[in-house]
Image (cartoon, rainbow, N blue to C red):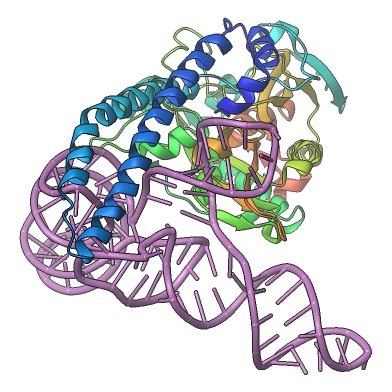
Length: 426
RNA sequence: GGAUGGGUGGCAGAGUGGUCGAUUGCACCGGUCUUGAAAACCGGCAGGGGUUCACGCCCCUCGUGGGUUCGAAUCCCACCCCAUCCGCCA
């Protein structure tokens, strides 16, 4: 969400930013709506001011026992004009709000131009892509080969884009999540949160999923929504609040299931667990002072990378192009993990700073000590990591010719000391 | 699902038609005192918007939206939300 006053002062920068996102110029239309709103509002306020004044005079007159009749008449006469001006202000204001709510965040200056992922820029790589003396399989072949990954029964229960994990793979999912959470909480200063998985409209509005992207979500029969990511409840934790600066930065993390309708993804990633209606993810969210948000994004991305480093899996970090970023982001790093079975890097984490964009939507503010007024927080979110995809990465990177899978050292404590997943372990 | 109570400033909590945008306390900021701090005392301190070069002036906001009235935090209606009790239940 943008501040109309900023747009008024920087129409060219605004339209320029939108252009980089492939959005047509909007500044002049928004400014016109705003002018209309202010004009009508000023009119209504002038009339109201006059009425307030007369109301007091009436009170004074009555107190003195004087005749207030003429004053009362004057007030009555102004009513229609005021109602008219108020209505015009209300309509213009509503139009303006609706328009603003549908506009994506602008890219930061350093963001590469481009409309899609082909314009993303590689920032760094870590690790060595493993070589195999056999043809590495994709995760679903490995999992099904082990008898521990069952898409058919999942389809029986729930349809396409679901999976049933069993035995050591079910435990591996749990182990990965625990491993990630322990790292973020014990070493990186995040506070673990267990939030609701169902939220109200306004919460999704706050993080930017609504009003535009309701189609991507599941809605419950009583009007709530299943969260598509823990970013939603975590970022909204302080919605509507004014907090003290000395409580910043706020860093929280959560393991939650994520529910996505994948409405626009028909035909892509139909095999395996890359793209599911339900998956679990460890999410990190930071609420910070505006001065800190750039540094915080680097830090957060580092926290996510550390998971893969300790698992010993190669990855690269991509800075997303203007057109490839999500609605609320002003800068995004994707971490892409190497998947030998697919012979390519695939997204496993997305870390974004949203600046004040979400905070303005959800009215999350802080008070500066010793100063008047309030400012909007900056919000950041990042996956640390998507658990299902991490499981895929472990399977593909640690697979062996006999179909078994080695368990990375760092995970073994979480797997009860298990070193290998093989069929007979099931 | 049934019944009751309630939504007021960062927090707590007064206020039931006329200088109430709101008493008071806490928190916070400035000052006096002190070697320093604490305590005490004095003063300041809601948010948003319009207008102005500026000082300032004005408008709105006591959950939201309507209504009554010359005038509403206070009365009426609808809705949203919260709490408690009962029922059901992991």
